[in-house]
Length: 338
Image: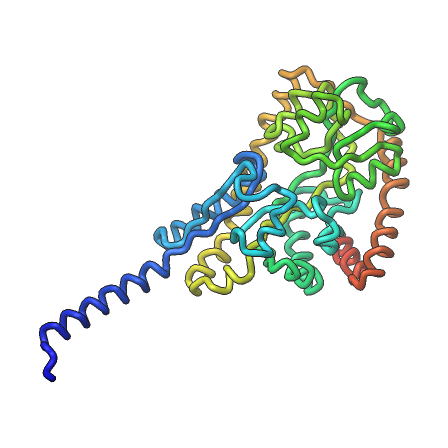
């Protein structure tokens, strides 16, 4: 039986056409990114990353940023990454310290991080440690970049504390090492999500909340408060951006390069953006008639003595018992800062 040559030629051409199209479409990649709240200084590096990746791949690789917990609750972002519900997410280690214990070394109180640039370098070094990478790999997560934040301070409602002892018995929204530090002086740390904090202060569920300035603005806690501590500086939280390992492995090499090569510029944009936050922060405090509380150095020193090194020692003991090279991680932190 003879086959129609024209028919064969047409069929071959059609197959090649569809095959080429399928290959082209396969190169178009969109990653879903799970965030919470709204766009703010805390998420500007991710916004910049999306912009850069799009540019470098001529629109072939896009990051679809979802705010307001549209994809997942903030406390469940790591779980979402682990099952591939989305490809990228931001989370804070203190939301589930048991799931990422190695990262909590960066949340210990009074580490003495002087600025955001130092925090970036410190995070990068700790994230590269094999024990930390193994820890996150349990959730199929690859650490991409940090979300550096300055030391937390408190916005509160009601009578303002004039000494550290005035925090005794006060219910405060404070996570991670900050929460533990506050507990040592008699405060009552309470776990409240960022988006719930305004209502918690306004209703009296908590008296005060610790945030970096951008978050006090973004979550409007400053509108519920009447005072702010300028220099308590008990610590901060560590909030990395992670990606699903399988999704990363599946990327074409040029897309991996576009993503990896954009991190430093995205962080630089974040730092530049954050500097502008203070241009808004202090005028807002004045406008809202927020009392600014500055503690005497003797008070701060007493707080550090009671809530600093003892908690470091406790952390090393607890983590070492879990098989984590805790002292090595803490030494890395101290060496970097020194």
